[in-house]
Length: 102
Image 1: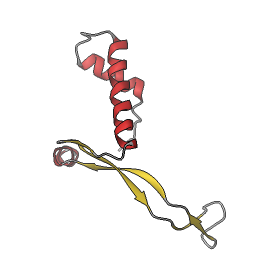
Image 2: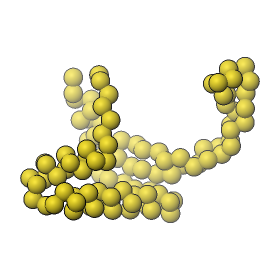
Image 3: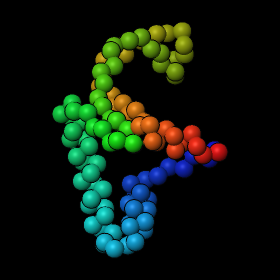
Image 4: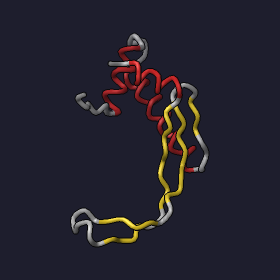
Protein backbone atom coordinates (compact mmCIF):
# COMPACT_ATOMS: atom_id res chain seq x y z
CA UNK A 1 0.00 0.00 0.00
CA UNK A 2 1.46 3.33 -1.06
CA UNK A 3 1.31 6.03 1.57
CA UNK A 4 0.13 9.45 0.47
CA UNK A 5 0.15 12.37 2.87
CA UNK A 6 -3.01 14.47 2.97
CA UNK A 7 -2.08 18.08 3.80
CA UNK A 8 -4.41 20.68 5.25
CA UNK A 9 -4.47 22.39 1.86
CA UNK A 10 -5.35 19.21 -0.04
CA UNK A 11 -7.95 18.28 2.57
CA UNK A 12 -9.54 21.73 2.26
CA UNK A 13 -9.68 21.41 -1.52
CA UNK A 14 -11.25 17.90 -1.29
CA UNK A 15 -13.94 19.12 1.12
CA UNK A 16 -14.62 22.11 -1.16
CA UNK A 17 -14.93 19.88 -4.25
CA UNK A 18 -17.08 17.23 -2.52
CA UNK A 19 -19.28 20.03 -1.20
CA UNK A 20 -20.11 20.96 -4.77
CA UNK A 21 -18.07 24.18 -4.65
CA UNK A 22 -21.13 25.90 -3.16
CA UNK A 23 -18.97 28.02 -0.89
CA UNK A 24 -15.84 30.04 -1.45
CA UNK A 25 -12.66 28.00 -0.97
CA UNK A 26 -11.56 30.55 1.65
CA UNK A 27 -14.75 29.90 3.66
CA UNK A 28 -14.11 26.15 3.66
CA UNK A 29 -10.52 26.83 4.71
CA UNK A 30 -11.76 28.99 7.62
CA UNK A 31 -14.17 26.29 8.79
CA UNK A 32 -11.44 23.62 8.74
CA UNK A 33 -8.95 25.91 10.50
CA UNK A 34 -11.51 26.77 13.20
CA UNK A 35 -12.39 23.10 13.60
CA UNK A 36 -8.74 22.18 14.14
CA UNK A 37 -8.23 25.11 16.53
CA UNK A 38 -11.21 23.97 18.60
CA UNK A 39 -9.87 20.41 18.75
CA UNK A 40 -6.51 21.76 19.94
CA UNK A 41 -8.11 24.06 22.53
CA UNK A 42 -10.26 21.21 23.86
CA UNK A 43 -7.24 18.93 24.23
CA UNK A 44 -5.26 21.73 25.93
CA UNK A 45 -8.04 21.94 28.53
CA UNK A 46 -7.52 18.21 29.12
CA UNK A 47 -10.94 17.31 27.75
CA UNK A 48 -11.77 14.27 25.67
CA UNK A 49 -13.18 14.61 22.13
CA UNK A 50 -15.54 11.89 20.98
CA UNK A 51 -16.75 11.74 17.38
CA UNK A 52 -19.07 8.79 17.18
CA UNK A 53 -18.17 6.45 14.37
CA UNK A 54 -14.84 8.18 13.79
CA UNK A 55 -12.93 7.99 17.04
CA UNK A 56 -11.81 9.54 20.30
CA UNK A 57 -8.98 12.00 20.92
CA UNK A 58 -7.64 12.35 24.44
CA UNK A 59 -4.55 13.57 26.25
CA UNK A 60 -2.55 10.94 28.10
CA UNK A 61 0.48 11.35 30.34
CA UNK A 62 3.43 9.18 29.37
CA UNK A 63 5.42 8.37 32.51
CA UNK A 64 9.18 8.91 32.62
CA UNK A 65 10.94 5.81 31.37
CA UNK A 66 14.23 4.48 30.09
CA UNK A 67 14.85 4.67 26.37
CA UNK A 68 17.75 4.83 23.98
CA UNK A 69 19.22 7.34 21.58
CA UNK A 70 19.34 5.62 18.17
CA UNK A 71 22.30 7.80 17.15
CA UNK A 72 24.38 6.43 20.02
CA UNK A 73 23.19 2.84 19.85
CA UNK A 74 21.17 0.47 21.95
CA UNK A 75 23.85 -0.08 24.59
CA UNK A 76 23.51 3.32 26.25
CA UNK A 77 20.11 3.81 27.94
CA UNK A 78 18.89 7.34 28.65
CA UNK A 79 16.16 8.63 30.95
CA UNK A 80 13.21 10.06 29.02
CA UNK A 81 11.13 12.61 30.92
CA UNK A 82 7.37 12.33 31.37
CA UNK A 83 5.30 14.12 28.77
CA UNK A 84 1.78 14.60 27.54
CA UNK A 85 0.73 12.96 24.28
CA UNK A 86 -2.44 12.89 22.21
CA UNK A 87 -3.94 9.44 21.88
CA UNK A 88 -6.40 8.61 19.09
CA UNK A 89 -8.60 5.54 19.28
CA UNK A 90 -10.47 4.70 16.09
CA UNK A 91 -14.21 4.23 16.39
CA UNK A 92 -16.06 1.08 15.42
CA UNK A 93 -17.34 2.43 12.07
CA UNK A 94 -13.87 3.65 11.05
CA UNK A 95 -12.29 0.30 12.00
CA UNK A 96 -14.89 -1.57 9.97
CA UNK A 97 -14.38 0.73 7.00
CA UNK A 98 -10.60 0.28 7.11
CA UNK A 99 -10.83 -3.50 7.46
CA UNK A 100 -13.42 -3.88 4.69
CA UNK A 101 -11.10 -2.62 1.97
CA UNK A 102 -8.90 -5.10 0.14
